[in-house]
Length: 77
Image 1 (cartoon, rainbow, N blue to C red):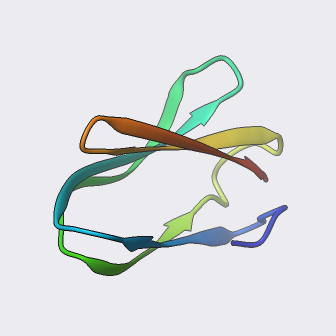
Image 2 (image 1 turned 45 degrees about the vertical axis):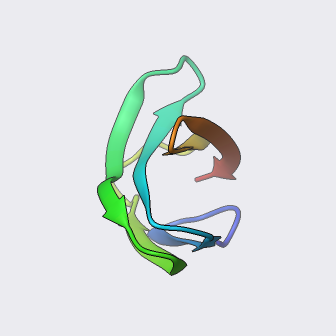
């Protein structure tokens, strides 16, 4: 994923087992800016391209929830 991103970025990671997953983009205050994915994924590589050209420049976080476990990654737009 390019960092900083300008028009879009791609979220890619390996899913170890079939899981329920939710991915959102939040700002520094914790406000949800975009729903990226909400559903079931099978094992393998998950990829999603996210269009962000309508967001203000700044620091955001990608919050990933898989089966009750959170991971957060920082992204600069």
